[in-house]
Image 1 (cartoon, rainbow, N blue to C red):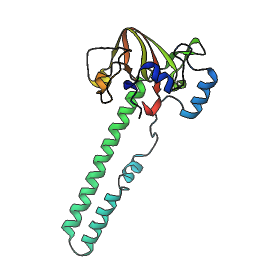
Image 2: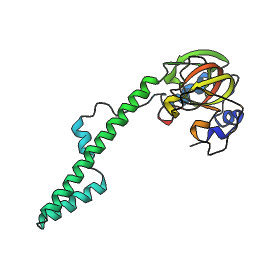
Image 3: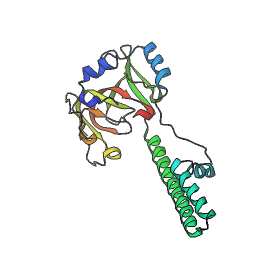
Image 4: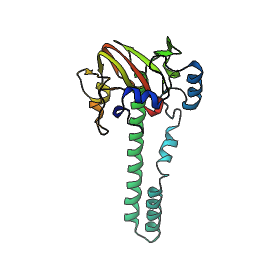
Length: 216
């Protein structure tokens, strides 16, 4: 994965073959949408609970444990067999619970997703559905904007972003588009980035889309 925070805005624009002033052309944006797919979070919906439970037993190590339990039972070590089967079942239940939590988290993120975005395409400013954003799009930000995708900021005028859902930081973070950070800069310290699902609370800015959908 590219460390966009370690690149300058101009370098990021060059890497994504976009123009900070004009944005992508309509043709290029359409082609990239076909390549990258819509900018939306995807989950496995409509899978019955019993199928999810059965899926917990498809791991190779679980199969080995089941085989060991069967062997133990066959040779008369019933206590060991019962313990092994119990461990496997408990593990499956815990896996199911974890999967349920992950699905709830993903649904919560979907609720945070922006419905639309203001972009520059072909030199024109326009409002488009956020699901149509692609890497290389130039997005305009202002107070109240829900960040529609992961952005490498190119401009920031007193820009502050609420990132509590991402980093746990309750105080809005001031952004600096001109900063170029070290490769291993922690997520909470990436002042030149804005991430999907966070919210602009003050100021204005401009950012290049660097990741969309499940890549955010």
